[in-house]
Each structure stands twice: as structure tokens, then as C-alpha cells.
Amino acid sequence: MPGLILDTSALYAIADRDDKWHRAMRDAVEGCGGQRVVPVSVLVEACYLLGTYLGPAAERKLLRALIGEEFELEGLDLRDLERSEAVLEKYADANVGFVDASIVAVAERLNVRTIATTDRRHFRIFRPKHCRTFELVP
Image (cartoon, rainbow, N blue to C red; front, top):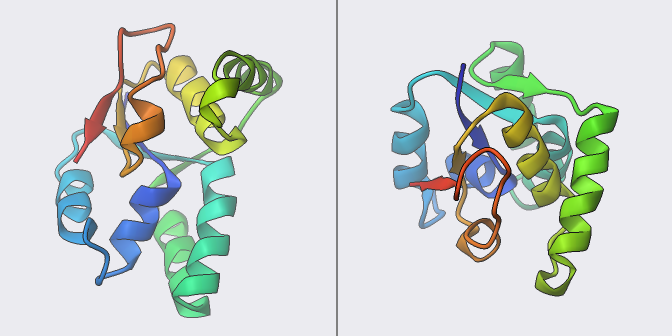
């Protein structure tokens, strides 16, 4: 069973040693029991940000981590897309984006309650179907 799902901010913080969240995020993710899941929607956004702000070597390092199974890449199915759309609708006033909505959908499907993120603003408001609230780390 997966231990946690990483969002884009978690992957970025781990990659950027100058990020204020770097050490805490790295420690939280390394200390997690179970799988460390990266939805494919997160991967696309993270690769863009890493390549843009940290350079192509950082983007390749993330891909090598996935290839080396440090993280588990999780695809999206049609039910995830349907749930993502419902989350976008429900939280339209909060300016929630597709990537965050897809994390909610994948977490519900995999029964994951823990999200590695620096995005407290969005992930604190979500009320997933499978638990009262998400546990946010670090």
C-alpha cells in the first residue's frame, strides 16, 4: 500500500537544495513507510518546473529516480479524470488546478491519506471521499 503521494512542490523542494522546504521535505519523504507515489500529471508539471528553473540536469535526475524506482509513477484512468473534473467543479472558487485535483483522485483510488506538499492552501481545504482530511507532510 502506498505511503504517500508527492505533489509538484514536493519534488521541486527535494531537487532544489536552496529551497526552504528542501531538508524537511527530503527527510519526510525518505522516512515514509510504503510506496512514494508520483501521479503522471505531477511528473509533467515537475519536469517543466525543474527544467525551467534548475536546468535539464535536474529534470533528468527526477526521471532517473523514477526509472530507478525511488518513486512509483501512477497513471490516470477515466475515473480519475471524472473525479478530477468533479473536484475542479467543487473547488472552483478556490482556484484549484487539474494537477491538484488529479492528486485527490489518485489518493482516493489508492486509499492514500498522506500528501507530501508545501501547498497548504489547497490541500487543507480538500475533503476527500476516503478520509476526513489529508495528512500533509512535512
